[in-house]
Each structure stands twice: as structure tokens, then as C-alpha cells.
Length: 234
Ligand SMILES: [Ca+2]
Ligand SMILES: [Ca+2]
Ligand SMILES: [Ca+2]
Image (cartoon, rainbow, N blue to C red):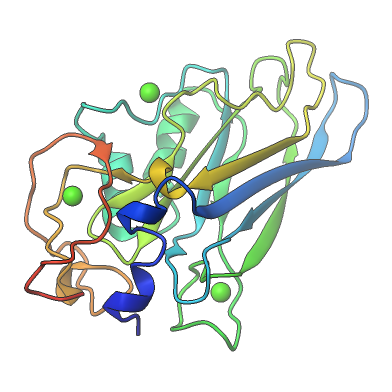
């Protein structure tokens, strides 16, 4: 179980601009000609310090640059809302991407390890796992990479790329671009869909009940970090 003092390390205001909480890397494992299938390894590492935050399985997808996961100041779409509130595999995001013609999408869970704080496919501090995917569609069209993951524990905290064209893993000719994405505390968003009461019953990673939580009816904003005055005392 987390305690308040330990898992506020990364999200404290003083640390938000400094702490690197995660990194995603994509490396080519087997390149053929640009028009053919490419095998990639996607690596997700939680760089939070001991006692820091965890992350739900990493959702990822490839698309033509038009698949925009969210906009700050706007209401979260249902697929992102579910991921931000419940974690999970991002199945609805994958379905949405498939509808838009994306060629590869999936979820990277973390392995069970003796050091895990509880049984979950979440990335606890220091954990690194990878998945191998084959991108066998039109690389020049499906060349942009997007990701999303829930902040654990939280009501509706998440990380994801706001700019759908921020990460171009293949250039216009389909040639692979080695990519590392560093994510810091200031890059964490609040989904605006659930009040941050940080009650264990509404907070995945604690004593969570799926679907529980107080509707926030808000918009996506930068996450301000864990509350230091919340009477529920996560
Ligand atoms: Ca694990
Ligand atoms: Ca956007
Ligand atoms: Ca919220």
C-alpha cells in the first residue's frame, strides 16, 4: 500500500518540473525495405523513485497523424476517460484507432515481480518491460505514434501525447526513426471527469471499485499533484 508521504514524491509541486516519471523507447529490431513490415520493440520504464507513482499498462497506437487523443481545455472522450479513471488496456482507444485506419495498436503491461506492491499489470517504480510489434501496413501513412497511461493511484490522472504528430516513428518514405520519449511530472494531466477526492474506494491502486467516483464534469487540465489537504488522506 502506498502512503501519502511516499507517493507524493514525484507529484509534489516542487518536483513537477524536474522529476522524470517515465520513458518510452522504440527501437527497430528488423528492418527490411521501407515498404515492407518492420518489427519494433517498445520499451516503457517507470523512472519514478522508490515510493513514487505507478503507471497502468501503456496503451500505444500507430496512425496517420490525425488521431488526436485529447486537447487541453476540452472534455475527455469516453475512451480516454475510461483509461484515465480505470487504467486497463485501452480497448476503446484501440477500437477508435481501428475505426480511423490505424494499423497497430495494443497494450504493454508490466510483468509480475516480487517487488510489486500488489498484483496488477502496473509499472511500479523502477520497472521496465517491453513488447515487440510488427508494423506491416503502409509505414508512410501510419507513421505517427501515440501513447496513454493512467497515473496510479489517482482518480483520473494520465499521461498521453496531446499533439498527434509529436512522435513520427517513420518518415514520409517509411524509414524508421529511433525515438525516446521522456515524460516528467509536469506532463501529467487531469482528465476532468472525476473529482480528485483521492478516496481509496474511487482510486485504482488502492481499494478501488470500478465505476466509483464523483463526476467532475470538467475539462482536461494539467494535474496539480496530490492534495495535501484532502480529508480522505490517500
Ligand atoms: Ca510489475
Ligand atoms: Ca490534441
Ligand atoms: Ca479529476
